[in-house]
Structure formats: structure tokens, C-alpha cells
Amino acid sequence: MTKKTEGKKPANTKSKTTPEMSPVLHKFFIDELKDIYWAEKHLTKALPKMQKAATSKELQKAFADHLEATKTHVQRLEGAFEALGEKAVAKKCEAMEGLVKEGESIIEDTEDGTATRDVGLIMATQKVEHYEIATYGGLHQLALTMGHNDVADILEQTLSEEKEADQLLTSIAEEHVNYDANSEE
Ligand SMILES: [Fe+2]
Ligand SMILES: [Fe+2]
Image (cartoon, rainbow, N blue to C red; front, side, top):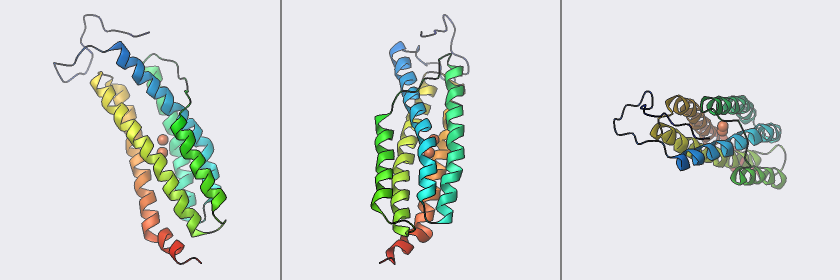
């Protein structure tokens, strides 16, 4: 299953001291890719519900835009599997399942059409983004360590989009949603 570049240094490696790829670490890396692949696919189903539940037009648009970005994240991961010669397989991510459930419970616990609901949706989604940022940040570094530079580039693109989404949510909260919620009865 593990492909070794026998007698050959991995391509595009800057460091002369890059160790030979560990089969155990390689397997761990692939398993983590399967985990985030499941998570991203799960989010493509969750984000439309968040969009529908959101009160402010700005937040609805943020969810709609991030849904499109998330579909691209799924495709990028498929590209990463392909570059590694692995099948794209999704492995259930318990963490993402839990985070999405938390977002759904916010919808149940808040009133339709309120800014308070948006506060809750923003916080729940930022927890999701932070999970993704941690995952892609770690995977990007691992890909570099193992000399998978093409895969590292793919992961870095998604990482920066997750950070942008997180920042956008912060600005929506700080510019009006938090204040609007604070003036609700
Ligand atoms: Fe994503
Ligand atoms: Fe995301």
C-alpha cells in the first residue's frame, strides 16, 4: 500500500535531511484525510439547514458562499487522494458529527427570525471552522514533512479559505448581529 521512492529522493524537497517516509505516519495521514473528507461531505448537508435557519441576509449569504467553498473542499480532497494513489474513502468523523448536532440544537433552542439565533449559529459554525483550521493546518505540515508537496499545496488552499470564512463570521457578529441580539427582549 505504501509507495516508496526506492533509491530516489522525494521530488521537490528543499531539505537535504528529509527522512524516508514512515509507513505508519503515511497511514495515519491517509486516515486523517478520510476523516476530514467525511467531515466536509457532512457539512455540505448541514450548511443549507444553517442558511435556511439564519435571520440576517448577510449570514444567509455567508452560509451559501461557504457551502460552495465546501463543495470545492470535497473535490480538492479527492484530488489529494488521487495524487497519493489512494481511493477517496470517507471515514466517519465523530467530532464533526457532534459539532453539527450542536448547531442543530441551537436552531431548536432559539426563536425563528431572531438575531439571538444568528449569534448561536455563528458560534456553532466558528467551532466547525476552527476544527477544520486545526485539521488542515496539521495535515498541511505533515504533507510537507513527508515530501508530498503537491498535496500540501491543495491542503493550504483549503486552509486559507477556512480562515477567511472564520474571519467573515467574526466580522458579521461584531458589526451588527451581536448588537442586534443584545437589544432583543
Ligand atoms: Fe471545508
Ligand atoms: Fe469550513
